[in-house]
Image (cartoon, rainbow, N blue to C red; front, side, top):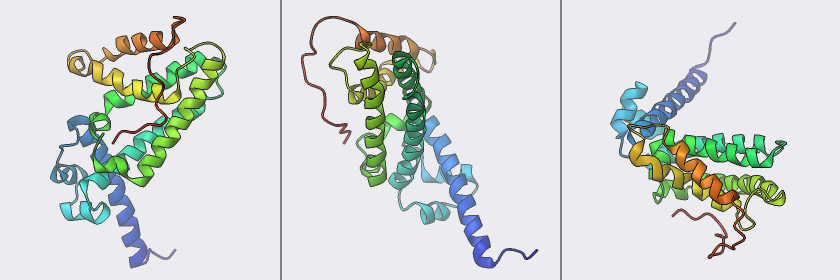
Length: 207
């Protein structure tokens, strides 16, 4: 069998290096947040800094790639729940999966407001996330399992709210977020008979 051509070998090396960089960056950002240096990421991946910049022109481009991976993970989870028999349990499962990702990856919430969030593919993924969140919420809403005014965008925003509330406790009590998740879920499922005092957001704007 003929060996790889030089061009084919170079492409294989580029694919391998990109995967190493993405894995190393995901791990580094999850542990240290967005201030982790490109040098540290390169060291973790076992490549030079120049290799990082051949694949990603800036840290924000690298963050965008990591964000896409996390968003796709959450979208896949949500999509798998849209046909669940119990819409209420499915919605809570979606909330739980989202908060777990936020808690696991410090960079997910820290990236809000950075240019990487305005990356076209990231914005499209956020729109897809809101769409599937609305599917899950609508199913629960139609069954009377959540308050009438609750939307998928509300649910997506509340995920980050749970993480931010629990953040000061997580180093010592890594499961503390579960307390606040249940408080939030009880709030959106409570039958108060009152309308919410402000209309739902028309879209998710995190800039």
